[in-house]
Length: 134
Image 1 (cartoon, rainbow, N blue to C red):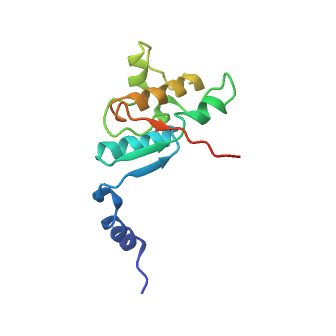
Image 2 (spheres, rainbow, N blue to C red):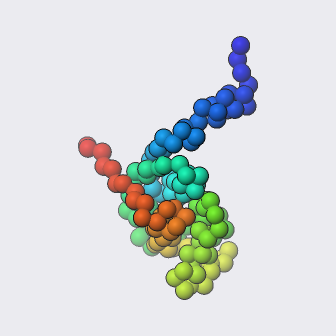
Image 3 (cartoon, rainbow, N blue to C red):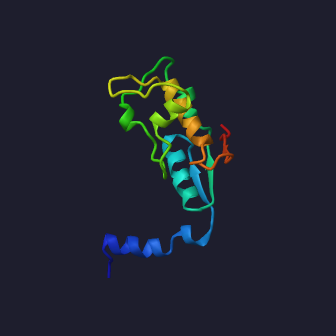
């Protein structure tokens, strides 16, 4: 007999790796990867992040580019308070960005790097750059 999706999820969550202390691997050190890693670390789950912090944003975006999203929609999800874009701006002595302020890509990259170095992420936790052979 087949199970409903919710029953399958409940069964899977009871077998989740999180409770066993096994490490979790996060592939990618962009905003989403950093956010997932921060949440896992807050939950005391060992995690390894593979990728260059904000690598695609640093190397593949056009020089002088601005984000299309507003400051409110730009934050990676942080597990505790203190990891939002306004917090980053305050840490640099800058004014908070308004909904009408275009966000330079360089600011977003610096924000991601700051997020990775913050206690939210587990300061000192390195992201490992992994390059595939051609």
